Image (cartoon, rainbow, N blue to C red; front, side, top):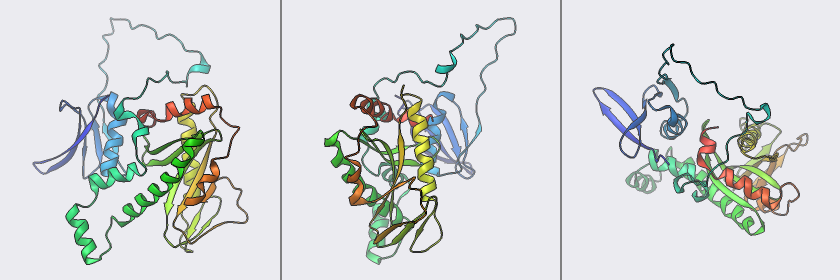
Length: 303
């Protein structure tokens, strides 16, 4: 358990974010203007980058990393034993997660809660905007958070039927998975979209809200399901079926294109309970095995 923290630093015209261990030792730092990251301790790179993306958003890049010390040429190095090819992509068994690494503790909307806490408005700013009835740049965050909480409540109803639920899974390649549902019907990567009172049309790859510009919701959901499948497959000794799901919250109507191939499941928030009766894809033992892997925060950060 590393319990890394992020600390802002500004001096001599430079503005940086430092990622530190609990004892204050810096393992990485980022230039706020360029988003270039210097890694000082390589073993913490994935976790440090994930934390910095949470503060700086997308566009974070590694500027440099310390190189490993070279071995004297006169000292022979031991040969690494070969590994059978069919095991080369299989990760070592995972120990139980520490409390800080256990995603089962995440509430619905955990990713947005973290963003609001670190980059959102102060209490005074929120009160002022409310009193003046002025829209703010943070409104979409609070709307999205309310939507994820609604869907989270609906998914939690399925736990009494052999399903497991995780929320706000931060990905090592940026962004997060809103919800992951694991049960006898397989694994479902669930993406929540809140569009109050809107008319939504969904095709195989693109979505239109109130007839506006196409948004790649379906394509992104399929890519996310592929990502989940790869991560879980590294730690499970059986094939893990993962399907993408789009859940629209607060919409007035939801339409699927007549030519759609139904590669992404579509629901409104009250309809996700339809996943509950699905069976035949994972045994109870496999459900627990997948859940034990998926709840590890570092499994996703290192992917």
